[in-house]
Amino acid sequence: MNIDVVVLAAGQGSRMKSDLPKVLHPIAGKPMLAHVLDTARSVKADAFHVVIGHGSEKVKSQFQDTNNIQWAMQLEQKGTGHAVMMALENLAASGVTLILYGDVPLIQANTLQALIELVSAKQMALLTVNMDDPSGYGRIVRDSKNLVTSIVEQKDASTAELTIQEVNTGIMAVPTEHLHTWLPQLSSDNAQGEYYLTDVIAMAVASGLTVETLQPEFAEETYGVNNRAQQAELERWYQARLVNEIMTQGVTVLDPARLDIRGNVSVGRDVVIDANVILEGKVELGDGVHIEANCIIKNSSIAAGTVVKAFSHIDQALISEACDIGPYARLRPGSQLENGAKVGNFCEVKKSVIGAGSKVNHLSYIGDATVGENVNIGAGTITCNYDGVNKFITQIGDGAFIGSNSSLVAPVVVGTGATVAAGSTITKAVEANKLAVARGKQVNLKWTRPTKA
Ligand code: UD1
Ligand code: CA
Image (cartoon, rainbow, N blue to C red; front, side, top):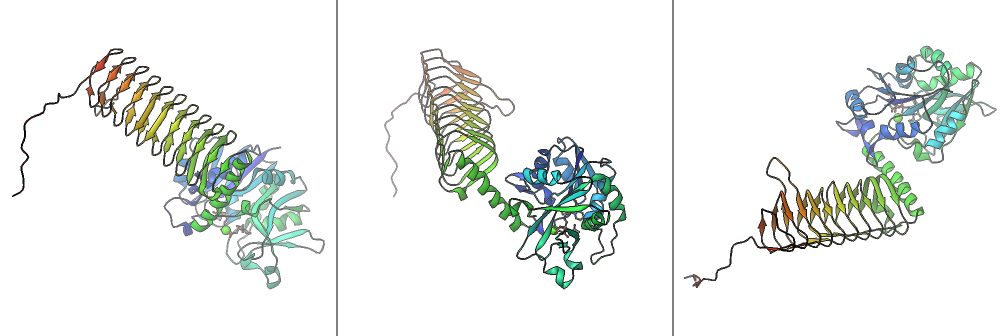
């Protein structure tokens, strides 16, 4: 059976007060529209039709690499029915059409699957919720046998209808062949002068179809985002779920309200995460990894037993077992730490390998370097990797010892077991096991210090 998904995303979102189209605003670091499309993808849809209008170029450019999207332009927003009409010519002749909203980001796959399964030649499906305060929403009107007969919008509703607490979420699944006949019959003869998608419900009933309703597992799945406060509310609800998920996998989270997950996190056993941590992109944390407070970890893999101390930033790094990082360490893209390596406070590492058991403990910059095993890099050591145009490589052999405050001017090689005296500026190769001293000689002069009058 063919499944078409239509996502309505043409609205301006004026209450966001933003230059960014509403559906591009993120939840958990991902545009709302991407949430909707990713979830819809899990129900094996054959085609995705996204109806865009306001900020359409920005929306399209964000999804350039996404396969399978057919964009439908709605130049003027004349209502939800009009919006679906813009995609109508691209829909299959038969099968099911699932209608979603680009600003209702957290709808779950199991809900959509259940909705689709309710559809047959003689039946369409509607996602509804019951609300204590239904104001603003379309009401679900039922007959004496409790069968749905229509949806009436707030502004068109009678006093009696306004008391109905079951409301339309807007999400529905419809036999596509009927949409082709119903949509062209919509009229804008109503309180808002709009083409209401909701009018297809009465048309379905008139054509002898039944309208099945389904309620979502969580009401939040159907919440729309119209302003920043609603966006924040959904963000918090979603974060609570993501954090709960990793806790069920055996992670200790010291304060679930102060961990944010913006991507996919995989965890081993007995991981501990302290307060104010942000995990972004694809993050892997091995058994027993301990992340102290205020760390940001992005697209990185951290193997078992490693400790990341407070205030460290880790981005696109590959960290082996039992490493010791931070506090205040910055590992930039391409950093690779072998087993037991240490990168301490106020150290920056970029595109470099730090070998097993090696230490970069204080105030250093290591960029474009290969550091062997059991190397000690003294405090304040800098690899001078950049001449303003080109980047050069520094190689440091196993067991080398770099004295504090040395500058290693790349390209340069420090041999195995070599020692660099503190304060040296190394510009040429240091042979294995030699001591390189490259600094001004100390002289002690006789001197009388001036005194104030
Ligand atoms: C709609 C439903 C209402 C339901 C409510 C749930 C209709 C007529 N009413 O009302 O029954 O309770 O949603 O939130 O369907 N959009 C377009 N083009 C348009 C109009 C809307 O793309 O011309 C998009 C909007 O960007 C938004 C969605 O459709 O994402 C819903 O539009 P909105 O104006 O919020 O619908 P409501 O009037 O609230
Ligand atoms: Ca709305």
